[in-house]
Length: 294
Image (cartoon, rainbow, N blue to C red; front, top):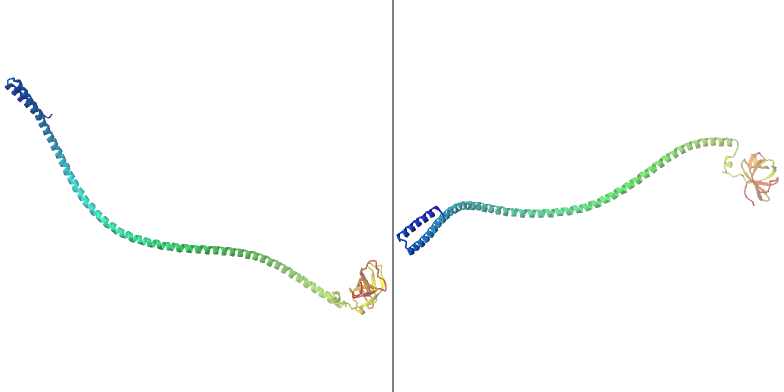
């Protein structure tokens, strides 16, 4: 209980006491006075409480007013901020509309660019495929050229070896030609000497045949090995050294002989081949041809 309420209660007690004294101790009257006093005391306390509550409410009202004033200021600031945000939102919406238009244009441009790029990519792929085929053909051509080059180099090496071999052979041929030229010169000198000596070179070389004739064996020198025979024809009948004679008896060839010496009327020949178990005898025929039964 507050101090003013306590003072009020004390005043009521004093009034009650005075009332009891005035009535001279009357019990009924005292009881009523006590009841009035109690009611008065309750009312006083109630009034005091109401006054305290009024003061508390006034203080709370003051606080609420202060808070309301603060909220009013905050509301003003919020409204101002709201207006600014609305203006900013309008500007953003305007900018958004502008950006949307720009974005649409940019999308259209990008779509067109994408289509162009896809076309270029397709073209590049086609070109790449063609280039791959061309590259494959070029690689195959290069490999063929390398193979041809390798074959050409191998052929060149073979040709170089053949040329070298040919050069070697040519040098050998030249040396051989020189040797042959020297031999030819010597042979020509020998042929000239033989011809000068009366020897028939063509007969010796087999280029001409001896004349066809038949001679008789007039002597057989059996002490020689192989035996020698003497026939009754000589240089007068064109018989020459190295002529081959075929010895016949009764038309059958029994031996062969080669002329070694020639005189005008006689010739000496050496047996070079004879039939088995048959000996050449005087009187057998010697011919320069192989005709007749053998």
